[in-house]
Length: 289
Image (cartoon, rainbow, N blue to C red):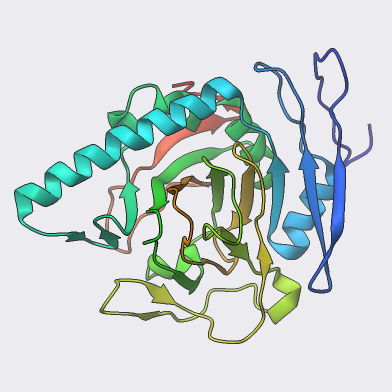
């Protein structure tokens, strides 16, 4: 093999099918559809690796098995019920950037929902980490992002790194579609690096009314993640992204897992920020659930 070649073995009855989508807003958007059995492993291609390096993101379509998708949906229901109970206890309809019956951001709860850790530490996530971060990875953060039916709020253009507030090594976000994603239900938009020429952290401004932070106020539209349930958008913590309101009569659910190449700590602190759970060491999974 040559340096940079991609090698993996897929035990499949039929090879995966890869589809290159049309140009959107002048930018070539590549989505790779993977039709694989439950235990197969998607292979991240060199084309996807290059797109991540050059544009800050790529998309894996239908990468999540049916069983894992069921786990994600049941875990989401469980955690929303728990958040409602906590809101009731506190006598509020607003916790951080979650708003009852409008928008939910349920963070760092992967170990409090049945079997959710099986997805968080799955081989799919391991392969994504190897392709983007290398052979060492830590679970930095996880959260459900849910927009309620006909009530979901929009989310401003931001970099995930903009929420940390200190210099750090960039990490990755895996945004997994728990439902089919469309413009109508408020899917995410990702801004390719080349569209606005920004690939470093910029200052963000907080909206006191919603708790959101925003760092881009221009008119570039970005690329919408219009994908079926079970697809994963992978992007750098330096990639700008946003989402629209949900105007449909169904909930729109996404599950976000973030992985870092090292443990991230606030300046002057020794404890990990957020989670810091070891996941990959020398390319091998330390945890599987």
